[in-house]
Picture 1 (tube, rainbow, N blue to C red):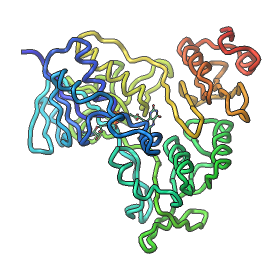
Picture 2: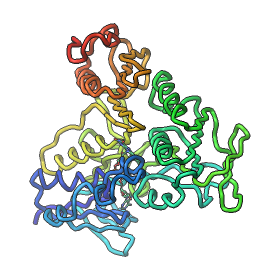
Picture 3: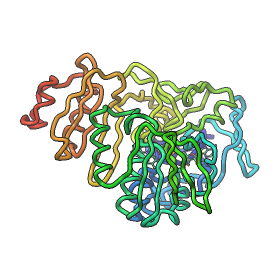
Picture 4: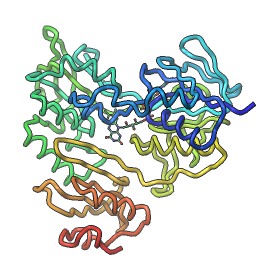
Length: 405
Ligand code: FAD
């Protein structure tokens, strides 16, 4: 009898694992168990085109239901895996069922970090992770409404941009002194702050939420600056907690995610972890990473599937990410943490530039705004650990593809 695989979690990573297993020739049973009611779908549009009402729900699906039927996959929607016995390779399900596995892929993703203040359970407070989250906030996401967005990371800023487009009145509160504080330089953060303020967003940095009170059904957001903002809708985008509890309770190593090796193998035999929930070694950056991006979720799923198919190939890639705000396409490659030099190429005022992050002359990362050529080239330079000189990078009179390494 051939081996079976159980995939826990049907996000980008879980969905890709199914496809890659079959593409890799795996012909045993595959069971996909996921807590959500939907087949695997794309999350990025949730804070972009889907929130804007420009993309119908069915277009969010990664693959149609016919794909899973054709692949012979036992898909269990709306079912949570509640227990894992890694010794006996068995799982307990929320519907009372049990499964056993030869290989299991944990693709459990993460959940929004809750707002840590009194009143955070007010009905006007919403989070943005699932289709259901967007649908739940939609009745309040109407022209003229005041929306307070807590956290100016990518999701918070994307929601602000859509809110402006839809005639809402967004107020963004960011605890750090600048937006995108975890990922961008002050130059790039300053650019996005100007764009949002110019579009009409009331953006306040260095301000946290101290409490949320109720006034006749509306939320009153009390800030650490002493302001009281009456809001129809509060959207919190203050980070993600990886879903590691299942693994942790089973004694599997976890440390800011489920700890895996270069082949996405976790510490228990037969168990893999991929996507937002996993923490992997990066050869490129010489440290462990837990990434939250579509690219990482897809590529790790391919890595685990390849290992199960007996064709192991270590996961070793340049991380990349994108964000859409207004007419701006931000594309980020690499990780900028630890940089000691930023080189700006292009023109921020024209909304077309690339910010290169270097450390000791080595290119670590790029933030490219409406500059796809620089993004693509930089991804390769980061991988090759060889890049043009800072002088060349900053000289926009040299065509990007003519930049010499
Ligand atoms: P998830 O998508 O979180 O999927 C995990 C699934 O597992 C969920 O359905 C969950 O319900 C289920 N699950 C968890 N525990 C269990 C259990 N015990 N039993 C059964 N099921 C379980 N990335 C980009 O690269 N670019 C972007 O522009 C971008 N925009 C984004 C916008 C938004 C609003 C959000 C929320 C994310 C965005 N991301 C973006 C991040 C990207 O979507 C994620 O990194 C990616 O979806 C992670 O996929 P995943 O499969 O690892 O986890």
